[in-house]
Length: 373
Image 1 (cartoon, helix red, strand yellow):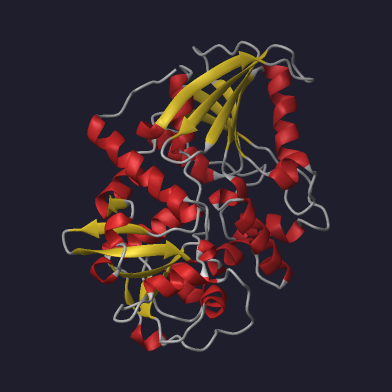
Image 2 (cartoon, one colour; image 1 turned 135 degrees about the horizontal axis):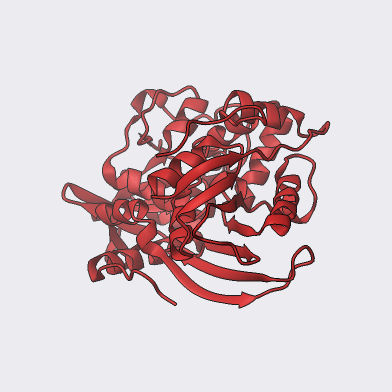
């Protein structure tokens, strides 16, 4: 079932973005253009020696771009758009991979002149956004498209298309299918699947019982966590929160929104990279930033759109995260009450939970947020 079909111009832009995401994941380059010109870019994580050689053909001005978060982790000043710096002749793929964090390195590789770094142009910033949306490390190698021999053969997208798709998440959300799925805790359950396009993220709404939508509905917005939810990892509190939420919903009825936001939106591969950095001493937020990501890459606008599709406008939200409350309210959902969801720490996640409280602003059972509106 498709709801709120977006206008044709947006759909065409979304198709171009989706195809470029696939190209980057497959280790191919794409063209990105705006009124000032264009570039040919490839994601460092999937870059091959052959593609690097072709991008760096004689006469090409090859450059590397990373996000502001990664630049600052390397001691380079940068703004939110990221930076671009020219690649010196002879710099190989391994050195580039170490510079951007695909291969972790204790020191910054040689061959990169940080003093030559410049703010990323809109086309370069769009390339970084495409890499991030593809759930790759947000780092690209690029060259002006006029200098790329096969530029005309590459898939192309406008920088404005990338920005439009990133801003219009609700327009991209499709309600696809639903079915009755009895669960161990409550047999009267229905699963409704939503898909984001472009991309392949799928979110599931688990409707437990027959919640009265005329009254505030108990809701849990839960980000997928393979390691915690399925494997029982002790590094986080996700699995305990999920099971606690399901118990509460089974008793009172309500909705669980299970969002495809693995690793706070950076994907499983990058979450595991971040775990390695945490083992080296970084906390969970700094580890993500070290890889080039923001402290939280999730977009909870999908949750608001899903609730509206289900006919739910007023909720009691099971959460400790004030960002979820704020985003849902901005999306037109009346959060009338925050219901704390606190689980006891263990020896493996105590520092993680402390970081969420002290640096990410997560609430405890005793704290609350102002009434909505």
